Length: 116
Length: 113
Image (cartoon, rainbow over all chains, first blue to last red; front, side, top):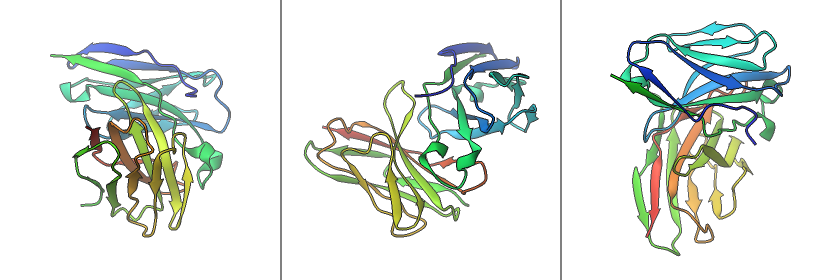
């Protein structure tokens, strides 16, 4: 079972910021928060990951609540190309070198629509 | 260019036939994975391999088989025992110990007629 909860869908306007929420109330101290996205008819691609501190990269920012029970993926300026399904996934870093507990568990994610 | 290739992109199979999906990577990754995706659903793990000549069942391995004879190749066979094989199949690879960021191929859409 996925250990995260995300809204089924969200809408955004082009060139506006988008905040995609994720709840993970049962997160453990060794769980990293990963985000992937899947464009239509393509394989998923990695977006960002973090543990406790907020993270930024060229694609997005990840804001992590102080109690780590929720996080938000932020797209600063949505483009039409950002329309995709976004998956929030917890992954236990203790299993970086093996073990089924280290596998990614994909839920249904949030389908983001971007309007021109 | 480094990456993962899957072939073919679309595959049609008659009921009762086995079919093998190809997955090749030139990223020098140790770990490889096979996922299945049904319409409107997330990905489900079929099999994974963390090293050559070794692989483990995922959550939905029944009706599927794999081999890992070479580091760069991880073919998936969908056997006639798989009751609902029509789906989108995705292959991925990752480096162990680097947060296991997975790189995915473009997928193969299998349709059983």
